[in-house]
View 1 (spheres, rainbow, N blue to C red):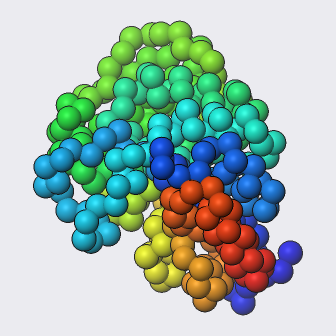
View 2: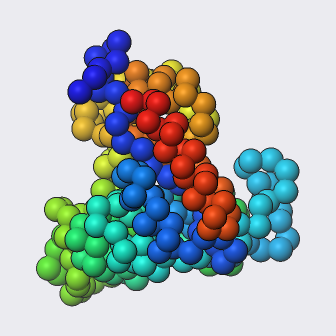
Length: 287
């Protein structure tokens, strides 16, 4: 395997991040197309709904794209994608964990992992849309603390025959919960976000980091060094939602990033297949 000037293996894994909606390509043909073109993974966005008030500003600036409130349920979508592929990794990018019931989520993730023979990559985040959170009964100011407890509870549910958890936000007595995930000890948990709180959660509960594409190489290197100081030298990095410029891809490769995911726009099937051909060409040039 070729190595970068810093001694890291060059990036050899490429995935796609996207919103699958009722207006774009359907899950099955998208999954087949990704696997046929050599992409190793797909990471799907989640939003249960978008309140019409639009008080929370869109982080990307300007008007919020319609795909945010038209996105399909990620687990149903990934189940269909897993059924028509053999090796494609099935990721969430990201599940808005504080807005979800943790016991139902544990069952959904474990069921998908079982049905796909251990291909789930569980990306999670705290979310940005405060009105959306409130509609789920979540206090935005407490979403981080809630999410930290949820991650602990998920691990208990996935790994213990009799799971229980007692926290300030998540609380249940000894319970039976099956199926258990195929992956041992559970599907890898990708922590999204670049804030101090998100990184602290990564160090204590995460298996991989999912920084967004605006994250600088300097920050990649800083976080890697910081994690090592926390005793975490085993954390792979997947950069989320990259464009097609080769320079950033190669820079991330030099920094030891394990995977990059291209942002795939939500388009009809024919247009999507053309876009995937173009992304595959970029990936081929980058290795």
